[in-house]
Structures are given as structure tokens and as C-alpha cells.
Length: 296
Image: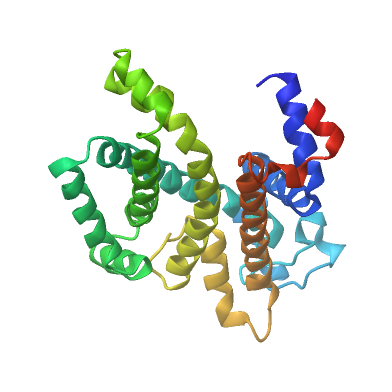
């Protein structure tokens, strides 16, 4: 990405202050997921029974206990940072898998159509006929609730979103003049789809992906809260909320801080997604531009 394009993105982001703050929160979250376990990973697993359910903002036991401690005396701050890595990894893997599979099937169904396209859409209708969370619960109840199975189930339930969106966009784009001109000049199907059609569909898919990331995070937290998600010794924000529900009346901070992390990241993803929708739409982009920006 060129320096001019980076400045343009930053300028458009600065126009939407809520999205700018949301982007900062997401950046800090990713930074915490990358470096948090390295900095405080030992405090996330080391038990200190003298600090059992220690309240937050008590620095007498050290800075790592600023958010309190859990029932085994482990630092809540360290566990939140440690859990962020697993939570983001699961959500990212599920979203990327569903994006790739759904986009490829949507391109086939939208451009080729015919019997193949109808078969793809009927399978999609079958998957969408089941509530996604209920389908995930049934599958994870039958199979072991391991991280890999959680990712696969969440990815399968989100594939139809990308597939149907891509198919609708492709069916509209393939009749445009520049696509017809490319066909007349003898462009191959691969070049038509990936060179001319996919770049136009990509901004919509990126916006959906940002929203879907938040949905998958909430779905994983729901599954873990019900006991069919990630299992110990692995830890996610959803697992931490589930572990703290037995202490809500005496140690509310066990569930509050991971729940706050889920809420902040989910809200930030929604704000950034709304900004992306406007910034990538030439019709609405003027809302983020000042008159002098249009002349740049």
C-alpha cells in the first residue's frame, strides 16, 4: 500500500471519530493477543491461593492483579490477555475459512449458474434452514468440543452468508458492459472472474467479514458458556465468563472483565464495519470527505 493511500485511509478514518476510537481498541486487542501471553503468560497459569478471588484495583499483590484474581488466585488481567489470543484465533480461522469457501462457491453459482449453481444453492438453503447456534450445539454435542471442531462448525454455519452475497453480486456484475467487453476480447473465465468481477465484490465481502468476526466471537462465547465450546486447559473470553458465573454474587469481576472485552471488541467491529461500508462506497464516501479532499 502506497504512502498516499495510507494517508487517505487514515484521513477518512479520522473523519469518523467513533470508528477511529474503535480502530484503536481493535489495534490494542491484536497487540495484546500477540504480546500479552509473552509478557504475563506465567501469571495466567500460576496459582496463588492467598490471592483467591482478590478484588480488582488492589495493587498490594502486584500490578498483574489490578483486575483482580480468580478462584485459584490467577491474575484476571493475565488471563484476559492470554484468552484474547485463543478467542481471536478461533474467530479469525472460522471467518477466513467461511469467506474463502463461500466466495468460491458463490462465484461458481453466480457466474456459471445452471445445474451446478442450483445444486449449490439448494445445499445452502438446507444449511440455512437450521439455526446456526442450534446446529453448532448439536454437532459439538455429538463430536468432542475441541478447538478444531468449534472452528469447523462456526465456519460451516457462516458459509451461506458469503455464498449468497457473492452470487447476488456476480449475477448483477456479469451483465455489465466491461465484463461483456472482456468476454468479446477472448478473456478466459478465470481472468473474468478473478480480475474483473471479484475486485468489485471484495469491498462488500470485507464489510461482511468484519461484522461476521463479531458474530463468531459471540457464538464462540455462547458455546463456551454452555459448556460445548473450548475446554480447559484452553481459555477464551467465553470460558472465563462461564467460569465466573458461579461467583457472580461474591466475585463479579471474574465474569465482568472478559465480558467487557467481548462487548468492546464486538462494538468496535460493528463501528469499523459501518465505516468500511461508507468508505468503500463511491456513492456514500462524500460523507467522510471534506470539499478540499475531493480535489486531492
